Structure formats: C-alpha cells, structure tokens
Amino acid sequence: MKMTVLITGASSGIGLELSRVFARNSYDLVLVARSLERMTELAAELNRNFGCRVHIVPVDLSEHGASLAVYQEVQRLGVDINVLVNNAGVGLYGEFEQQDWKSLDRMITLNIHSLTHLTHLFLPAMKLRSAGRIIQIASTAAFQPGPTMAVYYATKSYVLSFSSALQHELKGTGITVTTICPGPTRSGFQDNAEMGGSRLFSMMAIPGSDEVAEFTYKMAMKGKTVAIHGWLNRVMAFLTRIMPRWILMSVAKSIMAK
Image (tube, rainbow, N blue to C red; front, top):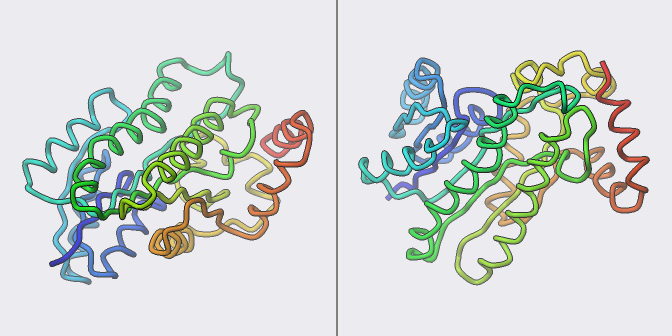
C-alpha cells in the first residue's frame, strides 16, 4: 500500500520540488497551497510521470482557521497522512515599525500558527500507527536575530525550537521530526519578501529549490533531527554559537542591506 505525503506551499519553490521528489519515490500526495491553477497543473504532471494519486486542497494557510480546514478535508477524503511537510512560509523585509501589521500577522499565522496546528492535528494518528515523519522547513535564519527581517527570523527560531523539542518528546514512538534549515534558495521567496535586491543574493552561490528538496528528502528519510543545507551555511550556523550577538546582528544587517 502506497504511503501519502501532505505538502504545504506545494505550488512553487521548495514545496513544488518536494512534490516531485516524493512522487518519484512512489508516494501519493496531498498538495496544499493557494493557487488552484498551479496545483492542478502539477497534479497532472505528477500523475502522468509517476502514476501517483494527487489530492488538491486550495487553502491560504495565512488565514486563521485554514489549518483546521485542511485537516477536515483530509478526513473527508479518507486519506492517512504518513508524512507531513510543513513547507509553506513567507518573509517580510524592512524595518519593523514601518511594516504593515496585517502583513506581519499573516506571516506569523503562516510561519508559526498553521505549522504548529497542522502538526498537532496530524500527530495523533501517527502515534496510533507508531509510524510517521514530520518535516518542518525552517531556515538558517533560525540561528540568530535578523535586523530588517526581525519577525521573520523570530518565526524561524520558533520552528527550530519547537520542532527540536517535539522530536525529543517523540523518541521511541516510531515518529521522526526533521527540521530543515536552508539558506538563500532560488525560488519566489525573495521576490515575495521584497528582498531580491539585498546583498545576500549577490555575494554567494544560491542553490536551486530542486537541490534543497533532494537534500530535505534524504535527511528526513535518515531521521535527522536538524539538517542545514550547504557547507557554508553549516559554518555560519556554528559561528552563531561562539560570536557575540551584537556582532551577529551587525553582520546580518549589513548582508541584508540593499
């Protein structure tokens, strides 16, 4: 019997490439994102190329109550979720007091609330089966504060802290929680966050979403707790443990400058 993966933010970037990776590895899929048109095209591609069953749930997870709507739709479909991938996320660039509150609230809802709620909703069934995988897409931003993206960095720190603690709670249950921390990645994220002109995207080689997706799948299947993509990102994450915080924030602000 085929296993099923639920992927949020599946219509573009890392989520889209993860959909292809899981389909290629004989999973059926539940795709969650705002864009019905893009997901319909992706579902047709995956079914045509890999013969997998694909369910589409067009929901905006930055809206309050959306995560429950996803769970209820999966229950209506009668699908057991073996792997939950909380990939959907968004950033917002700029000085905190100048940012629109509604946009900040939607980002917090998407990056924190929906991720946490979906994990809480789908975990009990995994516990009953004594098997399951939860994949949380965080960021290298999780390891330090980030001036000019203060709230975004804080949301990713939450994802890393919550998910690492959850993995510890679930030891011996047959369920793994893997937190993936990619650095800058070629996707629509930087444009949506209005940060495409920052130095960050001109001073280093930027991997593609397909490369990060392959890495994510391999690390999750190995049951890794935290996995940082790219050797330079791993070095930078290590440095956050030993460098004074004021230096980290000064460097981060300089790198993020346009």
